[in-house]
Image (cartoon, rainbow, N blue to C red):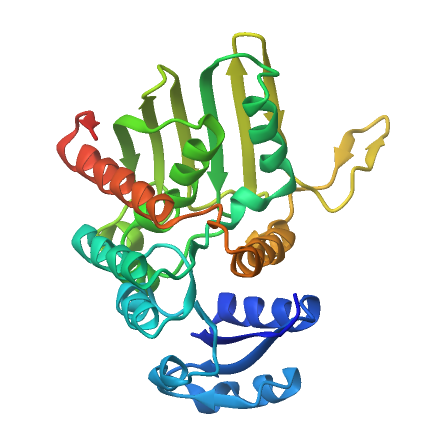
Length: 334
């Protein structure tokens, strides 16, 4: 790459630490100069172990540092759009974890700031970079299965989140299903035109008391005529269930769960195999590195990132439509 790209990581929770660690371990031409977190004292030892020199409680110190070329926004969702605007105005390239915001007007403000500044902006829909789903997209795009007729996505977590998290998460459609809304757009190459969400509280009553649902079947219609279904649940006791099926006019594609091994043991009592990898940190770790590689490559080559601001906006629009559909008990057009 030549001269090192210097970055600042804003937010050092679980995903912020993953990104910082991946950058330091895997990208010799990128330097994590600083990290900011409201609990700065709690991350100083971690930062020191990684060799990160500057740890701030105030993210604005990263924004104001003229030596920093790019920011990785991993803070709480309610800060994403504001930090995006400030970073763009400071001329910094931006990688922003999903979602950009829950408020459509705020998303538009952030995207306008990015456009005016002319900086790179990539949204963290990491599943696009998964080895399985990239292959599915490739096969669909090259016409291997003809025109897409049906797309099905199964996405089930191994355990429900705490009710306190649910209260600030934006709800299942905007917190969990948002990845699946992005995935169906990515795989089909078409926009969602109608949503019908059938949802309930079947896992944890505390989630319902927090005003959310934990189980859903979401029917979709696409601009290219295809139809789809997303199957979500906050709990699958056997592990992290991540499957996809696509049917086309010339054939079909199936993606099964990743497992620790592919060993199958057959005895007179049973035929057994490994359960799915337990959670997203195991299942998608490679994709976090791959999406970051794409971000830095777009900076070096001055090209558009593959997950743009519009790709960040569209799933939020679908999520809000799904929420409205559930509340009103009817299909909602986008």
